[in-house]
Image (cartoon, one colour):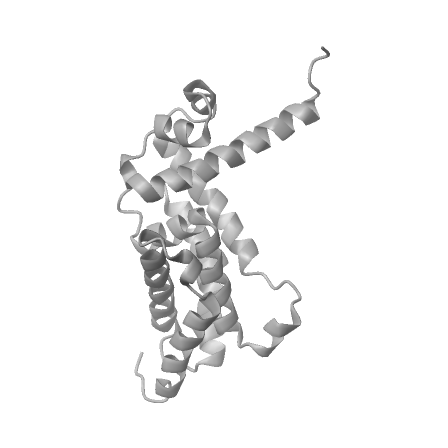
Length: 204
């Protein structure tokens, strides 16, 4: 048997990484910071040594998981040319994409929840750069859309309220295992229907 090419090795590595990331997200939802590398190996149906080859400890694994989730989240909120989206205000569209994304991608939920919790479950100050990138790539576009469309006195606070509402809805569905019953578009429309009538009165 001939040795594998570099391209084949890269493809195998990418497949393994995706397998590990997916398993890590599932285990984190079940155990939180009690997660261990061995738990991830079991969930991924991989040998402990295989996972350990990529990640020597759970903190390295979770750090990669969060950065990977940030890339996924950034792609999720990008326009995809769907003509139905053109009829929606950008702030509402971003919220729909975010909520739909966290319901489909456990790692996205973990990222948003971790950012909302200010990384307090994680040791040290190793997530300062990730927090900055999240603000720039995810939160700032939402706050900008709120500023342009809702005429809120404090767009950042309004965006934080929206952000918290999405995380809360997702958390209820995920932890009660009712994801299939949650209609992201309907939930976001409900949130915005309550927000818009008050926009002239609010002092945020």
